[in-house]
Amino acid sequence: MPINRWIAAGLAVAASVIVAVVVYAAGGDSTAPRLPANADAAAIGVDQQRSDPFNIVFDQSTVRIYDIQLDEAGQAKLDANPTAEQYVEGAVIIDGKRYGPIGVRYKGFFGVLRQCFFTGVNTCDKLAWKLKFNHYEPSLRFHGLKRLNFHQMNSDDAQMREVLTYQVFRDAGVAAPRSVFALLRLNGEPLGLYTLSEDIDDRFIADRFRDGGRGVLYKEIWPGNIERLPAFSETIEGAIRRGPEDPSGLREFSAALTEAEQSDDPAAAVFAVLEDYIQDLDVLYSYLAADRLTDNWDGIVAWYCVPVCGNHNYFWYEDALSGEFSLIPWDVENSWRSPSPIRSYYEMPDWDELERSCRLRKVFWDIDARAPHCNAVIHALATQGWERYIEASRELMQDVVTLEQMHERVNAITELIEPHVLADENGPGEIEWRAAVRLLHEEIDDRWQYIADKIAVWDATGKAPGDG
Image (tube, rainbow, N blue to C red; front, side):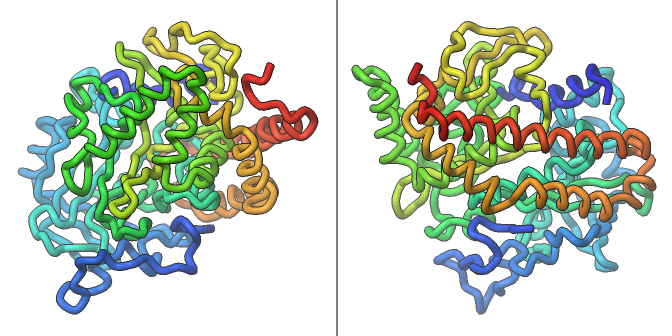
C-alpha cells in the first residue's frame, strides 16, 4: 500500500478521539461460560442466556451470509441522518431464517462513519452496520446474541488484522471479543466482506467474569484520568455501558492513584494501587504483551490531547464480587503495522521509552498528542513490572503462539476469504489485497523481532525502563 494511503487509512480511525475523545474466550474453549446468577434457564432457555455458547456464530472456519432487509421508508430514514446512530426497523435473513423486527443502523463514530459523510454524501465504498435483535422484541436473540457488529475493514487492505489481533489477545488469556468473517447483503444485493465482532455487552461480561456480569462496565475512561471531553461523556456516569449506574468504585480507584502520584516515589506508589485494584495483574501484563506484539497503536498507549489528554478503544470491567478491575480491548483494526505509523511518522515514543519528553507532539490532522509514559499508570506498569511484561511476552511468543503459527494463521485466513475478497466489488481488489497480505507477513516478522529484541536486552542486562 502506498505510504500516504497507509497512513491515512490507519489514522482515520484513530481520529475518532478528536471528536469523541484458534481460541475464543479467555481461558480457552474448555470452560463453558456460566449463566448469570439470576438467570431462569427453565423459563428463558440456556441459548438465550449465553453468547453463542457453541461457537456457531463465531466459527472461524465459516463465512456466513447475513442479508439485511429494509423497506424504502426505513432506508430513507437511515440515510436522512446516517451518522445519528439511530435504529430503524428492519429484519435479517440468516441461513434461510428471517429474524425481525430488529433494529438496524450504520455503526461507528468519527473515524469509521462520520468521515464517510464529510461532503454530505457517502464517499466510502462500505459502511459498518449494527443489528440489534432485541430493539423491538425484548426476547429476540440470535444464538443468545443481542447485537451483531459488522466492520467494513476500510483501513485494512489485508482484510484480517482485526480477526488476527483479537485472537492474539484471547491466546494471551485476555477477555477479548470473538471475531469472524461474514458476507453482508442488503435486500439481496451484496455489500461485501466484513468482520463480525462480538459485542461487549451484558452477555459478554456474564460469560467472561466470575461474578456473572453483575458488575459495572465502563467504556474508554482511564483510572486516574477520569475527566472526559463533553463530546464523549460529560460525567463519569456517561462512561458506564452495563451494570449498576454506580461509578463509586472507579472514583475510589482514581482517587487512590491521584494520591499515589503525590508521594515521594510515585511510580512505586501507583503500582501498589494497581496491585490493590486490578483483578489479576498478570492478566493485565498479558494484555500488554498482546497489545505491544500486535502494535495496537490506537489503543491504550495512544494519548491524544484535544485538549484533555486521553486514550480510547478499550473497556474496564469492575467485578461485583471483588470490586477489582479488568481491561478489555476494543476496535483493534489499527494493528500489525511496521513501521508503526504513530512512532515512525510522528515520532511518538512507545510506551516504555521513558527518556523521551512529555511535550505535546503534533500528529495527524495537526492535533496534539503526548508520550504514553506521561500517564502515571502506564509509567508504573513499565518501570515497576517490566520483568512481568517481558515474561508475559516471552510466554505468548514462544509457548502460546509462535511466529510460524502466526504465519500459518494468515495463510489459513487467506485461503478462507480469497474467493470472497475477489468477488467483493467494494473491497480492495485482488492486486492490492495480495500485496497487502504479503506485506502483513513482513509486518508480523518485524513485530516479532521488535519484541524479541526487548526480551534479549532484558536477558542480557536485566535493566527495566528508567534504570538508566
